[in-house]
Structure formats: structure tokens, C-alpha cells
Length: 116
Image 1 (tube, rainbow, N blue to C red):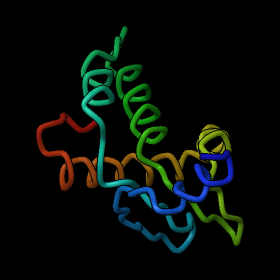
Image 2: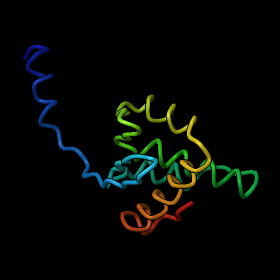
Image 3: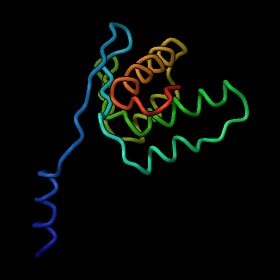
């Protein structure tokens, strides 16, 4: 089997379902509805020095693992590096919205995890 044949099969790979969360000012954020057991273990083992540090680490960790797409002001961010860079430059209001969305999503999709 050649390289092209292997690549054709990638289009048929299963993808985790996503849920879209929309905000008039902050755009549309799509989060994945599946998380691997390894990611769940890594989330549970996150180190924290202070309560605020724990919150920031947890939100960024979950955003990095769950964000599938974020459309802001007509610009789509889909690649993981782009999503994380956009998250890191988000305003305080955007971060607060993302935190609330991640909390809601984790509570709905992963009730066994402690939401940040």
C-alpha cells in the first residue's frame, strides 16, 4: 500500500462530536465531546501551587485538549497551535467566558471530572 492510499483513509477517521458555544462578542467556540483516559489522568495530576494557579492551569489544559475550533471576528482558528496562541492573547472578558464555557462543558460531558 502506497503513501497516497494510507492518506486517503484519514478522511474517513472518526472524529469526536463537538458542541458549539456562541457569544455575541467573543465568537463561537467548539469543544470536543470526548477525552482519552490518558488526558483524564494528566488533568487529575496537574500540579498547583496556589488556588488561582490551579484554576489557570486547569482551564488552559482543558482548552488545549478540548478546543476544536474558535471563530472570532470572522477569523477561524482550527489548528491547535493557533487556538492556544489565541487563547493566550485573549482579553480578561474572553478568558472569563471561556472558563464558564469549559466549566459547563465539563459538567455536561465529563461529570466525573472536577471542573476548574
